Length: 338
Image 1 (cartoon, one colour):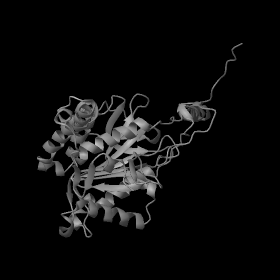
Image 2: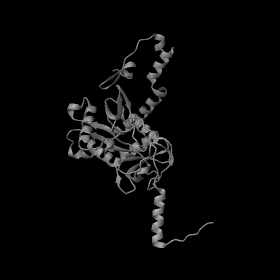
Image 3: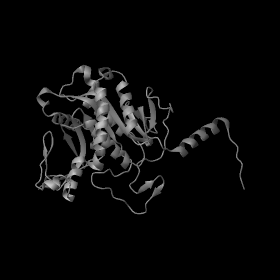
Image 4: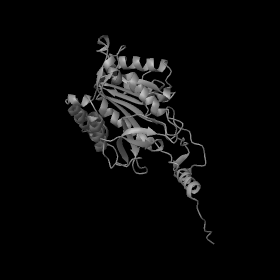
């Protein structure tokens, strides 16, 4: 059954999308008729090409980073990507480097954290100094990004490159997604404000409003020679191996952007594919070649952030804990106000 892509004259090919011109008059092609204007708008993309321009600007930033070989060592690459994120993300999205920590003290991840700066502080309050890693409470985290200069997805990764392997990056992502935080139900529309009736999320979306979102971003991609013509297949095989090794579906990355390959979750129903912002047990993973992957990954990240509603840091419990501790050590007095 042909989906809307086929009906619209679009054929999906192995390394990208080929558009097939449909019949029509010259006037329509020049945009003098409604059909022509619609076709011209389609060629420009959404909002007159605005989204494509954002991707191009981001790709320019990442091209500059690829040209700097020294970024392979140390935190320089993470810091540079943090600066790019700060340019393009909404102002409420704070960006830092460090660890996600839950209420039990467990901490995971050591790369880029995006948190809701409008509602939450970071734990160290370092004034935006990206050179120093911070600890960010799990309840405040919008997204986590594992960054690699070159992502190695070969069947046998060289020993010196194990730290840059896809398997290692997936392990880091699973660690972050395994941290504890109280779920936000779909009925919640703002902190402490819930709808009376049950709300059912659309197919392919998580059952809660504050799912973990974690991504793997890499400037370059290294695959086995026999798959250099189809790097998406190489990434797919490694992810399948990670899944077989026992990683839960919801603990897999929500997006992988590496070199020309982009992995995103989607649902497929009646031959129609719809992208989703999160990896869930009922989504499929789509691996696409020929992408401006990092620019597209930024759009995917922004979509996920837009969908997330975070819960609350347990300020009351934290304060009461400190009060009890001080009371036990030094005592307290009370004044009844009547």
